[in-house]
Image (cartoon, rainbow, N blue to C red; front, side, top):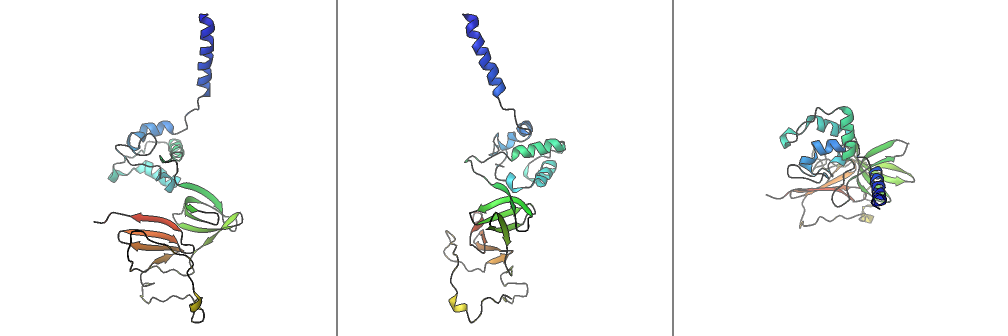
Length: 236
């Protein structure tokens, strides 16, 4: 009876070992080099901040440079001794980490008109448009066109308070004139919360409109009014 009872237990134990998923490449390096500061899930620890939302915003090359050089001013050491394969495996593992709420920045590759591929960090996406921070660190405003996307931008930028460095506040655009100005109507509206009054001229560059209030800034898709990002710091 004793042998008959031991055999099934041994079989179950062996089956359990075989069913285990092998650790991902880079996991051991993360545990030994990163988890002590950033936590075992990358969501922050006693000595370092959460990195689950920061990693997607950087390209592989930027992360490679960051690992090699570190951030001495912020207390992050250099990992210059990592070999290229070790660094690549670690970066691959870092991209699997997710915030505690289960959602996080998404990277995507899309095909734009003409057949070119564009890859980057998805800032916003809907059925008809997308705002993508590309690997070139530029914001790409995209509109859905069948199975592809087409890039959009502003016909003319308004890069300063007065429009240009001359301070003329003159726009070369001629679509609005005396004959049709009376028929203009709002296309979209964006409300800034917790702001009673604004006395500011929005800035537009490459189709992105920047609107500021005290100690905060909103970046909007100038064509649709969709919020791309919002930055705020406490007032002092």
